Image 1 (tube, helix red, strand yellow):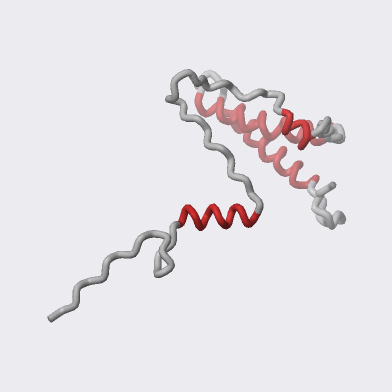
Image 2 (tube, helix red, strand yellow):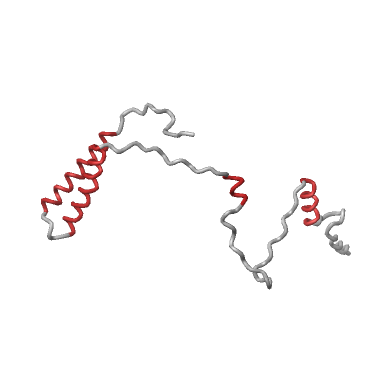
Length: 139
């Protein structure tokens, strides 16, 4: 003869399982955390979804009157401007000469030479040794 299976214990009994909601409420109370009230559902009658206020007072507390400063960029040198112009303009001229029949072939070759020259000039401007150990980061 086999013995009958024991009845499952009720949730919250000391003999086994716990009521998880009661346990969670106990932990939250012990930490002093007050649960937020649930947000009303959008399907509830008489309740409209109002857009959030763009002038949220919490944002003012966090950010205050802080406005990030504009970065002070040095003016571009003439050499850099001409190098970039040769690179971009040369590539465009070469592409146009390849696509359009009205532009002569020698103009495409001239564009290719200008693009290569602009690239070489930009690479030549890169300093060989970086003397700034901070990688440009400023606080």
